[in-house]
Length: 601
Ligand SMILES: Nc1ncnc2c1ncn2[C@@H]1O[C@H](COP(=O)(O)OP(=O)(O)OP(=O)(O)O)[C@@H](O)[C@H]1O
Image (cartoon, rainbow, N blue to C red; front, side, top):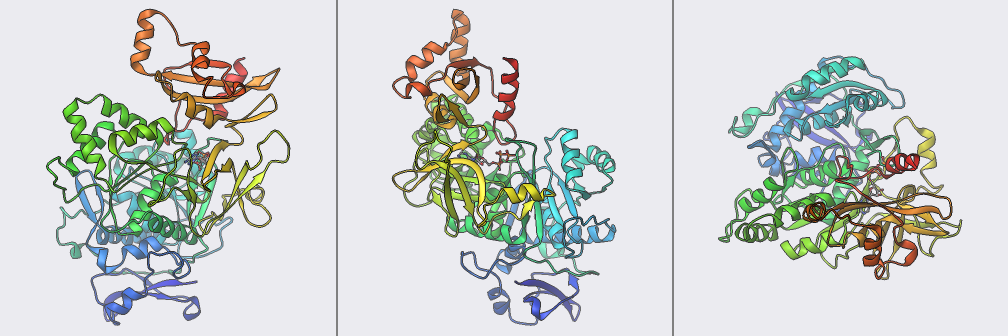
């Protein structure tokens, strides 16, 4: 295991990596990455980790260390609100935040955390819109030996309080926009509160070396790989959100894995429009890019119009490429569905410009829920991009992915990343298909535990350390994994058959009049469960039906679907809704829907 030490020498501040055997306690100092340490720059750089898998065992805060590389210090890490922030400015701010945290004498509630670092693993809640301040808050927390808990801006107050109380948050870092609400919520759970000082932008401070602060922090700075670094709450799709504890080691393993598999580099520029309190937005689109030295541009809220516009600005039709051209985009399936609708509403000239621009990006990815095949195919027709679909979960972040190079197969999530082991635990209770069962994952990126839920943690693992995902899965003839859905919500038991709701949804979405749909089982006295579908019609179709006073019927749907689905998979109940209730990640809480609709019967 490796530690990091920063120290002062003749009034200057330096950083170095050390094995624990070489030190026990040391002073922790701010550093100036532009100052040459008393050893040569070459030896400084070579002691830093490479981006490849299988290099040094995971060390602390790979993301922070990568950002410390002198080669990236001056380059742009974050763009937001028309401002750019260099890596050096982020780190300088992180150091300020670290100093602020030390100065406030945080009450350390260390239940369940072994003492380590200066803050001893105290939980620091971070409430900020996607911004340089959010990133600096998180890095500052890590620099202080704290555990970052990104909090959702969208949570209603009660849910926010649940998460804050559950994770025993000692301190809340927030930005101005949320200060009033957060201050009162923090008081409500006896946590201290501070605003995150604004990060200086390259515009406000063109001479970035000015921004780097020096000064000592009077505390121990050891941050150990196995120590908790982050608590992310699950979406709550299958139950009350649980706090998933990741360590510096699991984070390191994951960012390396992603940067390597998808070839993230310092020339990449990510357009980021995902929430930061879930792993997709936090790891795939922020931490792994920062680890690779890329630039991440935040747009505050997903907006079809601004995304298409940003791509068009990046690649004007005359063949030019803007300096800040976006190269990578990752989103959830509903985002692509909406981008398609936005494209269809454009005039032909705008369509040509938009399609051309989107084509120029290096990589477009989808995940967090199943990518409907019609969306994938339509997207490819418009932009030429065969979306790279991958599979992940809060507990291990990403584990299985279609390849960057090589065939990407619609309806599959590809193959496990190097270093990830997977196993399918077949259900012996009957009714299942041979080769199908619960997916179990063992990976260096696996979480440490569910926060304060030792029994649930224990039950989530097999005796030999595989995490039981709760997702049903099979492998196709090419060795690609097919996710059949959550065993608890997507797998229906109908007359002795086990059916995948995701498979049926994928077929129904091919119907020209259906814009969105959601399939699940409702209790049925004869068959155990009945295949039930909520359908949202395409707006044009809906208008026509309203005009003609007719309604889309179950009979019509089944007549259309009977050549595509076996008879026992055809829906027997149909509900027409105006929209589907989706959470911040575009997911529908089927368990909750089943509960509500099952009770209504
Ligand atoms: N490409 C994909 N195809 C199908 N399902 C996916 C894909 N990527 C992610 N998922 C689904 O998302 C789940 C992980 O999401 P997350 O960790 O946010 O949990 P959740 O199910 O949304 O919430 P909770 O764990 O609280 O119930 C996976 O277990 C899987 O069911």
